[in-house]
Image (cartoon, rainbow, N blue to C red; front, side):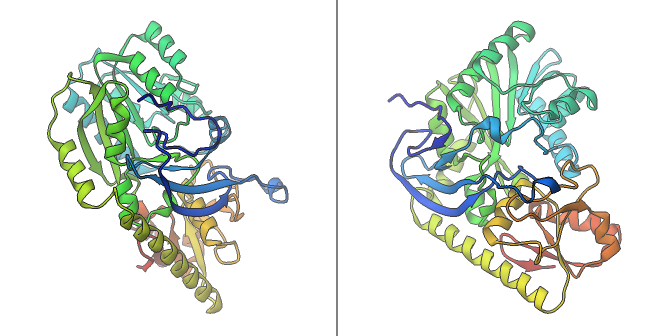
Length: 418
């Protein structure tokens, strides 16, 4: 069967991977603005654009996906504010990732490593330290930061089949292509896959790392549902996808980035030896019931429960005269706070580190201001909501070391006061 893996902006009523029409609603978090479309103070009184934000599951291949796709040119505007390198834990994680890839695949110093959606070049810095040839592809102005501040050669463009042909002419074939927290975001998935096949050397390896559906479901991570995340992959859905391109996953790993991620190592069929990890994880997915409706109903019930518990906590804090504020402004917090209806009267600000590009802006939808996090030490609020909860432990340690005495509130996977 032939499936068109490219989808145009707008409604999506078939599985993007297998083409099935057997889709079931998992969770509707309402119409929401784009999570990184932060507002300036001058924009607060203007109309805001929002889009449907609903997660569906494919009953055939177990992919979960949104049923409305926003044009990538709108989502990833030139002034897109996310930078990966300012998060210490992520920067360290990316270095370990690069070191592990070099060792696992056996790359030599002549190898070309291409990172698609390379942001400020944090991952490629790790490959550069291993003396690889490196190239980033990044559509936003963060590409300039990669070039000027981090000395990472970067092409500012969306990744397309035509671009991959030009890269091959100028740089040769790639021994490794990486996409970290990117491969689930691209509407024209077929175009991307064709570009990867063009760019990848015959014995090369494509590595994709994304939020993992099993972790999302078991951790009630409804905050991973936002317009950038068109798809949330199970391993079964990824295996299904690569079969269409005569490719196969020969190894798979799980790690704790994003609150639980899946990293798949992919090559042309028959070029790499399987290590048994794929079969093991597929069996686990089956044992967890990821092809059945029960686990998705539990996820939906848990999302509503944690939302209601967090709002109850916020209202009680306000009624009792307690100061309740937020720390961090990751993209996922936009879904959480808009789904909850958490406004500035309940949560007066979001505290971000001084290098964040989001400082001085306002959260879309809820209009909560983003301020520099030294305010936490000055104000010593009663409670600090950890919106980058997936980095909760190191964030709490860092803020304690700076003198913060507040109690912390974890919103997920359950509401918990620390």
